[in-house]
Image 1 (cartoon, rainbow, N blue to C red):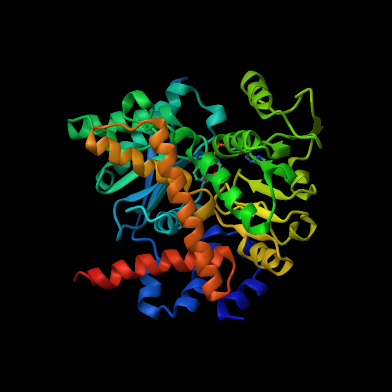
Image 2: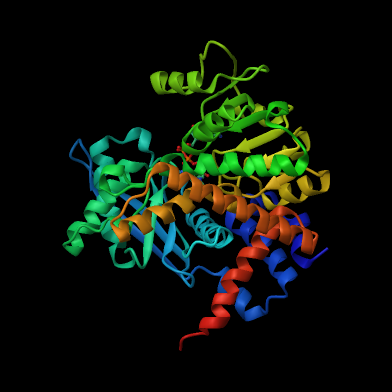
Length: 429
Ligand code: NAD
């Protein structure tokens, strides 16, 4: 057992739930395999730059409130930082740091020329009007303006941010630099230089990766019961695309509740129901499950956690009954749970590979914006397919070579690619 693995085995629950520590432990295990020297280890582990800003906003009722926003640029040695912006009440600096680092590794796994960044604003969008959200987005953008730009840092949507948020960000940036600059952000509406296929890209990538992993396990889609956690961009669309491929989606959950049908859910009808009512609850051809966390313990062949971090932990991992986990969300399994899953022989395809479809098509969007030439959806989808299939094969080959899990293999591949760039560039002084 490496030093890092031993540390994972003995860590406290608080440490287990700290996503940056979780990331650091996996990083160290992979760095041990690579024999990475101490100096480079420190450089690659630490964020390059962090910004914390106050966002004063006049609310609709005339009162003033100050929100806190972050942008962390973990590493920009391979290109501009890339990563989403999250709006949620529990956003915190350690979470943003971890998400930024995961973006560095994710971009390297799929070999797109970006570094990793992430942003967040502490707020509860459910209690904010559209105009308050617009003011928060514009003031946040103005606050981090100096470190943004198509060659510096290119944000994208994440939890509770969407195409409209990206349109406001693009407009605010463009007004400051006095020219329309579409390539400063991805995940924009198509009318503003967005890419065809971007909205579905992460879910499509999850579907492609699930298919490749199933082949490895000798399973066919029609024999697979799938449990999906999260019914948003990644979970909802991923479930829909897997349903189309013939998988039986037996359960899907959102933050309020979950639904179950052992014969498989009619996903287009489920999503139409969510669109109409805002909830999964009450879908007539399924049973409601009140406690959404219970679905993680349902028997299935494939589990797609596509909601948020720390969902599969040392507390519930022993009760899981699945053969394959495809991580749609970032960090849904803690480092400790991952280790237990490996010991149980569950194949886990890690976030930095499984949900990299989004950043891959974000890269295509950035390329199209810079060329001023836009691709067909077919070209986007075919290019995405090629990148994801190659990345899966690359990670599987490293796993085979080093006799490690897919997760550690993905970190080894990514860290090696970033370290190579450092060695070639040298350290500017
Ligand atoms: P989203 O806001 O569109 O959807 C999130 C979904 O998760 C919602 O249905 C919400 O109700 C549900 N949810 C929240 N807490 C839950 C819980 N405890 N149990 C069950 N469901 C819960 O967000 P998204 O864009 O789909 O992002 C989901 C995850 O995927 C995040 O970890 C995000 O960082 C990651 N991710 C997103 C993209 C992307 O392109 N959108 C790309 C890569 C990774």
